[in-house]
Every structure is written in structure tokens, then in C-alpha cells.
Image (cartoon, rainbow, N blue to C red; front, top):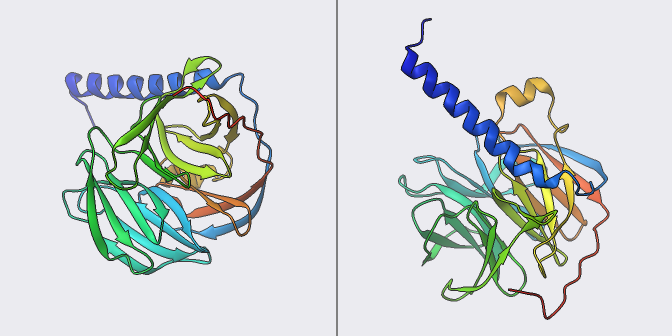
Length: 271
């Protein structure tokens, strides 16, 4: 089929932009040490779910899926992708990352400036929180929410009014690391997906330095990759001390066992 010159140029520019974004997002990680891991479980995942956020409530997994007119939040077992409970979100909302705390799950939206709070385990809508900017990833550090917006900046938000209480710039090898997406708090460490890559970075929350990275490009086979979208979705299961990872429209999720790197956690850390 012949493609009009304007259309072809647009496609080439889009491909160049995507490739450049991926290169820019991974270049600062060249000197960051890789974490070794062992895959201890491989479980079925809903390949129709455009995964945005994952977190555990007890040993049940809470997961959000995005796209307009398709966004939803669900509660499932690690043994089966079938939801125990599921809640559809408004058609004009694009669900993003989520965080679990205090028997509730809070789900961000991409550009709608709304975070919807649901009760657990029944996923009954409770209240809405409001914020400026984009919503990408969200996690809970035991005291406050941590919010990513696709930049190199992380925001700590109050559990009550969602107001910003702290801002931190993430740096790898001294350079700002952008495209931070899904977040997970893991025993005093902050894990983050780097969008458009197969990498998860480990961030010291005291100073924003990237101290380690997980290279996860080998989880799916080449055939599976052709039918799936990017890596996205990380959830720490404290009872088993396992890190579960998946992706948008992935057929599987994987449980990883790894040694956690040391962090400083200095009380006088820069903000």
C-alpha cells in the first residue's frame, strides 16, 4: 500500500521521537549496577488489561488498567487473572497508578486531575482527591503518598488533602532521570518503572539517587513481546518478600526474589 508522503514523514518522526525518548531515558543508567534476581513464579495475567498500577492488599493483588472507556480497578489472586471484584471507572477517565493504605486503594487518572479512592476489598467508591498536573505512578511509604508525573520529579502528598509536602529530583549518575512511571515502596526503597524501557530502577528516597536497576527484557519471549505493550506494574508482597512485575497487555506476571540494596534514609535528606 502506498503511504502519502506527509503520512510517511509523520510516522518516521513519531518513530524517531519514541526511539529518542527511550535512549534519553536509559542513557543515565549506563553506570548503574544491575540487581540479580531469580524468577520464582510465573502466573497468568489478563492480556486485555492495559496495566497501570499494582499493589498488594494482604495476599490479594489490586490492579488498575487504563485507556479511555476501558479503565477499571480490580482485586485478584496471584493464582488466577479472573477478578474477585472489579469496578469500572468513568468513560472519560484514563486510570493510572494506584496505592493501597488503610483498607483503601487510591487510583490516579492521567490528565483528569482526579484520584479516586475505593474501599477494600469491595472496591466501593468513597471519595475523590484533586491535584494539578498528570498522574502516572503512585505508592504509599507508610506515612504519605508518592506521586510520579513522567518527569524526573517525585511528589510526596498528604493522605488527607493530597497536598504536596515534599518534592525530590531523581538522578542517575548525576543526571536527571525522566519518564518515571509506576512506583512501589519496598522496605524503605523506592522502585520505579522507566517508561518505554524494560528497566525498573531502585531509588534512595533520602537523596533521589538511583542505586540499582533491574533489567527485565528477557521475561517475555519474542513472540509474546509482539502482542504485548511495555513493561509496567510492580508490586511488593511483604508476606513472601517477593517483587511481582508485569506489563500492559502482558500474558504473564512474574514473582522475583532479589537482594535489596542498602539505602541511606538520612533524616536530614535534601528535599
